[in-house]
Amino acid sequence: MLRFALQVFALSIIAPLSVLSAADNWPQGSGPAGNYVVHDKTAATKWSVARGENVLWTKTLDETGQSSVTIWGDRIFFTTMKPVEADSELGQNIIAFCCNASSGEVIWKHEIEAKYPLRLSGCFSDSTSPPPLTDGKHVCFFNASGTITCFDLDGKQLWSKEAMAVGRAQPFLLDGAIVYILQRYMPEGGKFGHNHKNASLDMWTQLEAIEITTGKRRWLSQCGVGMGSIPIAHSLDGKPVILVGRGGGHSPPEKPNGISLVDGSDGSTKWTLPLDNFMSTMTMNANGDQALVFHKGEHLWVDMRKGTIEKRVSFTTDVPTCIRKGDGFSMESVTLPGSKPRSITQQSNILVGDYHYFRSYTRPYLGRVHIKSGEVEMLQLPLQFVPGKSAAEDALLWSKDEIEDKKNPLKKGKNLSYHADFLNEVKNSRGFVVMGDKRSQGIGWGHYASAIPIAVGEHLYVPIMSGNVFVIRWNADQLNEDAIVAINDLGPAGKSWTRASLSYSDGKLYAHTIRELICIGK
Image (cartoon, rainbow, N blue to C red; front, top):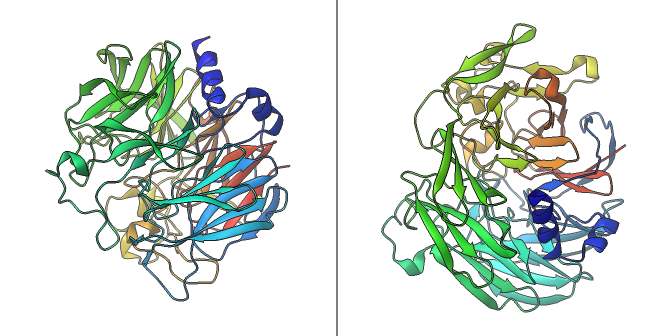
């Protein structure tokens, strides 16, 4: 009952429930309920973009981009970088697109300029990363190089302001306001350095709420927010609250490391829970009156009213894990290596039903914590899926021992992301290399910011940077090989780089790769 109440609350802060249900809108990166989940819907589970199977249309894009697609009625919105004319590492201007949802045909587009160059096709973010959002009357685009611009649905500019939304941010709507993470110190040479550890309060990254109609500030949070934190709006005692985190790499200045609960009406801080060496790089989920947090090697249940830890369970020690062995699978008790604060792939977690799903940071494992019982399970997934000319020629690579030796120096060492037959080319559709960080050549295991999974009906869609998408039956009784519904591609191996989450509308899925916009359906 509490879960249902939360979903209805989240829908009501965006638009009337009946409108959303009729149109199947996906108005923000986090979907209609603001939690990356839609219930009682179905979408395709098996497809191949490389072979054109269950693909309704594709649209070739001139330039790289990584925003998820947002949808209102028959219109879809997304961004790419401004096209380059040579191999490039940095960029700062983006193109905002409005296209027809049934064909991909461009309805209108606008360039949005900004001041601060960022690395192209970054494995954590770039200027195009934050998804657009819309309330059905306004559509706002975020250039993470320093500009927010709002249009009406016909493409008329309504307002624009200089403001740097954090690249990994997922802006959301709350009671007529846009809530996003405001970056207070600027990048240098396309990246954020390690020299801000002792920056003053006025340089802290914070949540800002601005009016969607004017862009004027409604409130600024009193506590800091980490660059990798993905806040989600929740309801507590019938009032909007936002769970946020602080802490991560690059010596962030915001203190103390840990989590806070923010009042969604005025930005004030309701409580703060310090957590030593906390990595805030996750979606900040809650269930009823419990916040659900991954910290080091433990899953925490935190009382949303008091800000106190009520329960903790290890998700890294002696975990029942379904492991690939030869041509089959076996169950083993696994303890994950390492004791670093990073234990999950950044932003890879999603709460769906009674399960808090995550991806391991050190192994190609999908895991889940049952939030009522505390039971933890993990399932090994292949490092890479390589589509063939026919389904019979498809290849699944489960370990580095199966990888061909192509004398690529990136494949040496322990980084799982480089154990692949086909590393990412990171080339746009016109053949130019558009990459400012060589780590983007990795396939999407380990140290990068994941596309956030989504759930449609009983299926969980988990994309990785190579353009592989794992489809999992999230409510399976056991997280074993039978829970794997399909492993799909978003294009040929090495040519389908992506950091965008999938989006859903009217029975169709939408994906955004370095080269294409893709509509998937039967």
